[in-house]
Image (tube, rainbow, N blue to C red; front, side, top):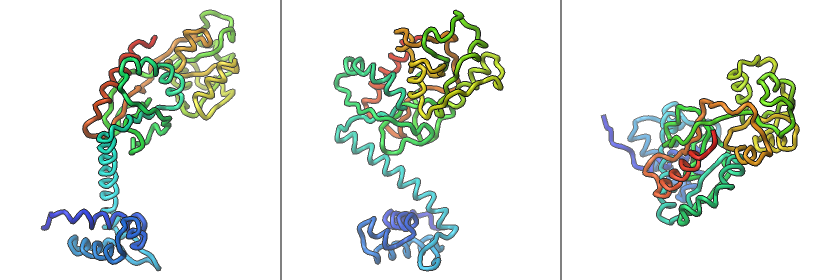
Length: 295
């Protein structure tokens, strides 16, 4: 049995042809001739001893064996592309691109950015909103902050930072009793967000409240919009403590029922491979800042 790996050029030609189902488009994408792609495909099929494509009308289709190989080449070339992108960023001293959920970026990270600059003035950081909480890191960012429940994905290194704490918040004076019992919440308008659909049910369960009694007065696409609605007195929002701690500290919001820990963790996700040196500085600062957060 021949275990020798086919040439990288042949596998690249196959992967691009399998993606486009066109020898012509594969040749254009790889900047080679139509004949060069055809020769690479023919040699690959001869070496493997099987057909990878079949004619279907005027175009191409993958055989069962071709589908199997395509799954591997797509993943392999994707990982190679990601690794090369990361290496180029390190060599060129490009900024460390950090993805954050938009609400966390606006309400927690940016207000503390001056402290990060003071502690690590040489850290070249680029911040970007990143809402793809369930997707892999891809090549757009060097690292990402995620609120997610374990187990972690196999294609990322994860630095666990802190638990997620959720609780109801509202403007002062929205309810008279102090401190109110949990059932007093049932008399108030309840605000929801699509990004935290499980938050209210989880809090109701922790308080021993009947989930059937949960109100759904207003829903918002983003958590940030829901908090703005709470700040103008439209009802009670439920949010991670990190996003409202400044509002609670200044009295713009109150959290009369406190916060409960959820199974989710706030973590720093990194691609596989040796991390950039500046990741250590960022992780140290995040640990320090999150350690100072009020419970």
